[in-house]
Amino acid sequence: MLNTLKNKLSLSSLMTAYKNCHIYAQYALKGILFIFVSLLTYFILIYPALLGIKIYNEKLSQRPSELAQIQGVVKQNQLLKNKQKVAPAINELELQKIKQVFQSRDLKLTIFEQVIAENTSVIQIQLTQAAFSSALDALDALRQNWHLVPSKLDAAAGSMPGLVNITMTLKQAI
Image (cartoon, rainbow, N blue to C red; front, top):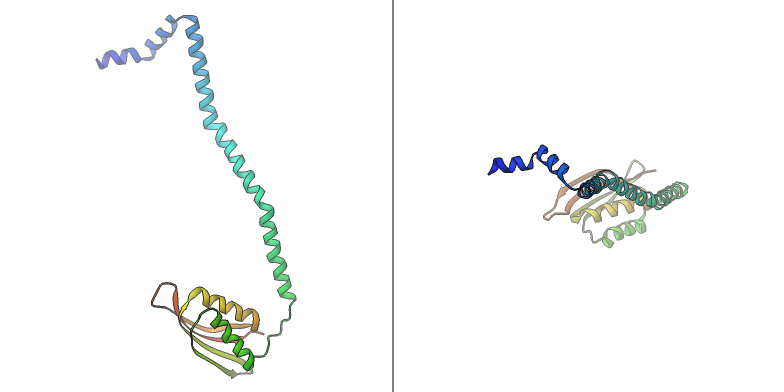
């Protein structure tokens, strides 16, 4: 049975059957073959290229907004450079403001003290069970407003994910 099926489906038997077909059946088979090859060519070669062009054009249309964002960042950076570069002196009022930075971010200050060493103001801070992202926000606010940057920083994982214990010494950068 398998041999008879192979004989019926062999190329030579198919060619013989094709030659014995009516002329209109041959034209129909040629037309079907042409349509099949055309569709296969379209889906293998043309459609992926058209899809790629569409994706490229969509990404290209996003470029102006990305450029505007980058220009905004550059402009903001230039404005920051032109601002006053002198750090405000840290007195009692400024210390209270610095404490407010931490309290507004729900950060618990365990130690907060100011030490004046080598004509610069040094602030020692210890945070316990502080949210890491809030601590980074507070450090950024201190850097922007009072030019305080960490000269020493020790951080350890807290009791839960995202919480840290931080001990740091901050100095004013001039």
